[in-house]
Amino acid sequence: MSGQTIPKAFTNAFNGMKYFFLHERNGKIQLCVAAAVVGLAVGLGVSATDWIALLVCIAMVLSMEMLNSALEKLSDLVQEDYHPVIKTVKDVAAAAVLFASFIAAIIGCIIFLPKIVHLLC
Image (cartoon, helix red, strand yellow):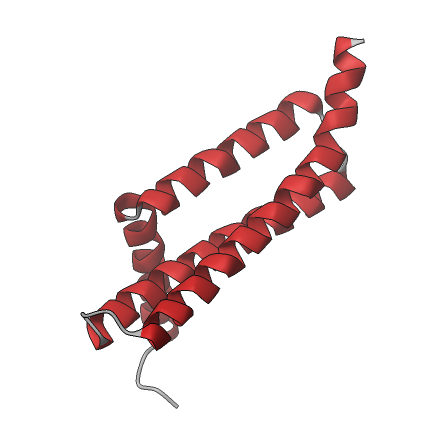
């Protein structure tokens, strides 16, 4: 068992989120996209089931982006110069974000497009 208390663990996690959203460019971008999705969902009055899908997508993409950022920082600390294995680690971590974002975008289209088309027609 680690010597870290539960409140300290929460504090550390919130500090990590704060750092991510304040200092990571992609964190800022993903936060803006998440806010836009939430705003659109509120505006279009999506169902509870749609809310669940959207929130899972937001959590999935933000979590992948956080892990990608953490892996990049660790990789840079371990190996400052180019190394093919570090490149692969970074590429695969970025691919995880891309894949999660792609699936989230498809789900967003499934949820939002019919509602937008209905409003326009």
